[in-house]
Length: 104
Image (cartoon, rainbow, N blue to C red; front, side, top):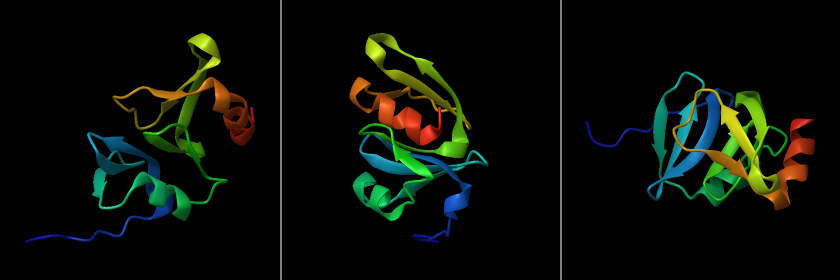
């Protein structure tokens, strides 16, 4: 079978993240895809009104955000759907920008 290229619509993506050095895209349908591209390149290709670089490991889609909780030291803890095994933490420095992007 070899390498397969699967077209994934941006509208289907809930978030992107780095898992042990590999960039993955997770869809709303809870499917995970490995991408052969850096997270920085993914970020540059996305619409910033729909996606936000939460930290070095995660880019989240606004519609995928379930809750935003205050975390210690004025950081934010973001929960997404589908759920992610890693914690998505927004730094104190980015917290106000993130909240205004989300519209809260």
